[in-house]
Image (cartoon, rainbow, N blue to C red; front, side, top):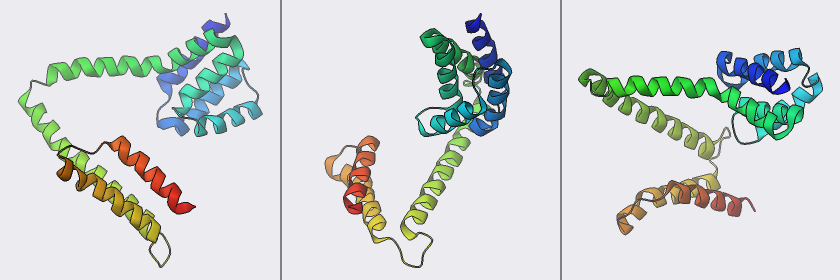
Length: 184
């Protein structure tokens, strides 16, 4: 009985939670409280833990509540229920895309969107870099500028020397290491 309740409760969350994690919290609260799975304090604590752990809040909460109520099987059922609606929607979209991908107008739309996405990502990256290096204060952050310059060199100069693209993972690790070294 509890597995069925967990499935239906979190399927409802998966179907009707729109607007991201914070938009889903009221619905999750409603479901969890209506079934009496957690107290208000436990739910608040779990939301805080879910925000600080990897993965979507809805999935983390569903897994935690399912585990608390019915062990491993409860965690699996709750997690599956909360992701099932998104999974089905993605399958439907993929089916539609397969049919549209051969359409020349749709291909033109995708080509145009590619440049828009590159522009948005580039603008966001530049804005984040400027905020990080220039900060809110009057003086630029020299350490952040140094790390940014070294990473830019790794990104743009190394591939020309080695004739091989630089791995994004290597850049993230190098950035973390440089940041840690400069913060000591």
